[in-house]
Length: 295
Image (cartoon, rainbow, N blue to C red; front, side):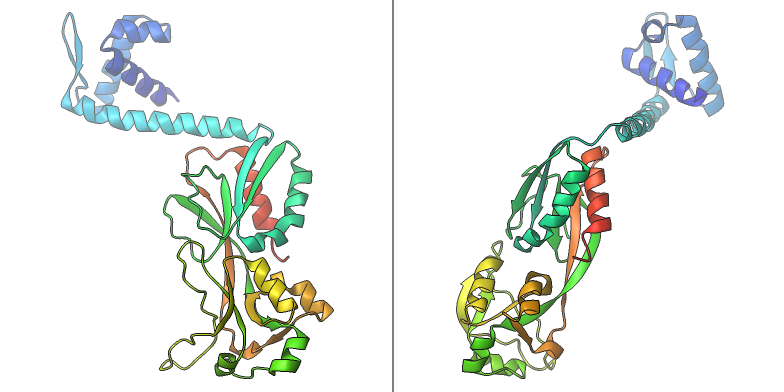
């Protein structure tokens, strides 16, 4: 701590260009400041200031040292602020974004709200690729591999994808046994809002075979229309298993091509990388990591 005091004193003299002004800020004499700087120079083995009867100016070594000292003191200040924040109760508005399948997370978010009633949740459910920082989100839950270097990510869990249809649909159209059989079925496809591309169903195939261009009976950029049309017997959809768990248990939908799906959806929580992680974001991230999966 004594060394930090010397660095703080050095920075004050560097900014004010005066031992007297620095002493006034610290409540000590100019002579005490001058002696402390002299001891610092002796310890470092370099001259930090050019001194005259009227002015004090930095040497080249002093200029270099000043930049390091400012960073060191800023880190200490940040550490102190971070520790003080941990003593504060989490509160305030928390703006989060979830994919459309995130509506299934609502019971867990309700549990979070009960634990932290002073946090106001502002929830956006959308499959569009939001700009977390530019749009002012505190945290987002997303699938896929994180790629934004401005964000910190923690893995939440994974779920498999399944191809589903209604029993009545299979009675009329038959059951596909191989991926190629889908070319004769009504497929309910998903279009990525951010790119406009159709989602490729993760069906295993020999390396020499191209991906199937599935016949589209309906295309949507959200999950709900796919589920509605599939339950109404209007075609097959490839969706996260967690989105149709209840329908599968009740027999309203059944899965096909189980042995051919070779992909899981991996979920991450992401938040902006910053020096100060507020209590509301810290408790949200910790809660989601510990409680979201299994659903």
